[in-house]
Length: 96
Figure 1 (cartoon, rainbow, N blue to C red):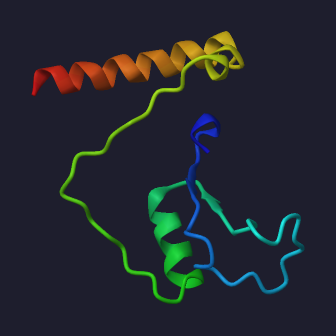
Figure 2: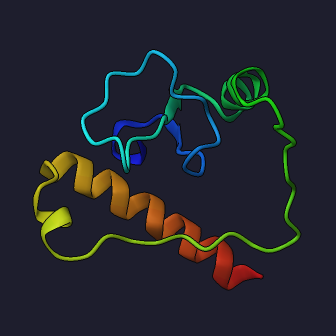
Figure 3: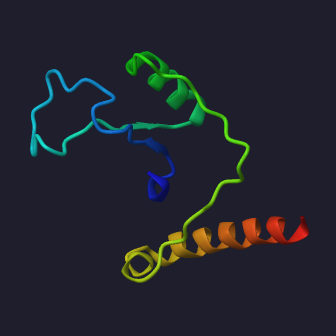
């Protein structure tokens, strides 16, 4: 999702009913969602997951930066844009 500029969410296994799903691997198949915004993801989850309650964490997020082959698979333009965002986030972090 992040490489495509969308929001992705994969609920825990069994959290969303799999009725009507054509399984590739019944022991590990699960449902995941994609949306354009966090707000639309919240809407989807609250309507598709029966016991959904949004959680708000007081912890700061931890962002992972891919390493190795993942970075070589990106187009140069995408890699430059990604690196600009990482640098901007690093600048924000160092100002605090």
